[in-house]
Image 1: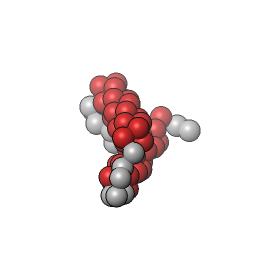
Image 2: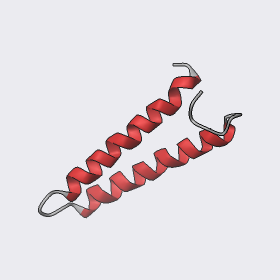
Image 3: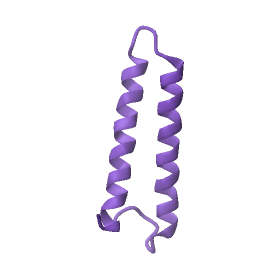
Image 4: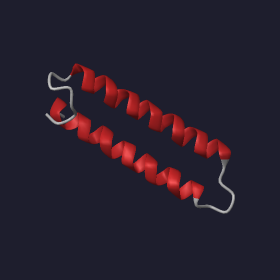
Length: 63
């Protein structure tokens, strides 16, 4: 995989985690442990996206 596709992969992961979070929150009794894991993973992905933005000459995720 070339580096230029990596940001799109992270954005896709972030979107999937957002959907999983919404789905869990939509349950009658959301599992706090599941919510915590999803939120933690979402933050990790977001941190990786920000780190990549800092490394990109244009400062953005679009290569």
